[in-house]
Length: 315
Ligand SMILES: *Cc1c(COP(=O)(O)O)cnc(C)c1O
Image 1 (cartoon, rainbow, N blue to C red):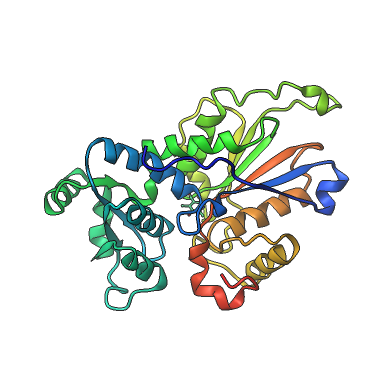
Image 2 (cartoon, rainbow, N blue to C red):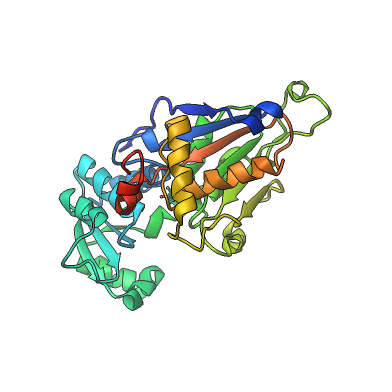
């Protein structure tokens, strides 16, 4: 075992007029505070991947990411902490001679960066290129972009262990869908019915509903990638603010208000859009009365670097 699970992950409960009036509980599971540098869902994905690497006696880790990648920065910090060697293949060459803060962080943590054209980067899942990289970099353990593989989903399934048994809704942001997949796996085959139904009164049929909030346009297509026998899950892609990585003044204002109100920093790419969406869904009475909702703060705060002067919490 290379990285141990934390003993406990805090859940912060939010009190809004919409939750009070409908007796809804709204909690945020703070994966962003697991570690100052290795935060969020990437930590769970890396954990499983690195324990396989260690079992295989592979001490070079090679992975892929864009210039703002939370995964690259988490990998760099984790491999440094564990004394492993890391190689990052970066999409695009524009920052090659002028590293942005994410890439500088990776480099400072000992990751060797190699920049490839967007065209070449598209081969990141092709066996031939992976074979070539294996030979070139001395048989590294290769983690796909975002930590998105079966081991990654196995890791994210363990997030469910930190969610109270009586939660009726689990909400996460989605990128590739690996975290959503892991959570569905962790919840179990049938989105089981919450046993003590009497708490909910009024004949409300309760079960764990798993909801993915997509921060990109048309993110519902990710549903095709999810393998699950479960009925009670969905992906909502209405709150994308123009597309992946896009934002506007309204989203920034939401992040600042959210921090002022709840002292919880959100990241502009994933969790701000998720919480904005959750708030809209509350306004629309999407959630039944007495729902017990847990939203997963998947971390990603390093991604606020480019807008930190606009944030009351400084990014
Ligand atoms: C990577 C990331 C996601 C998306 O995770 P997937 O498993 O790819 O769906 C969500 N939130 C944050 C903060 C991330 O960094």
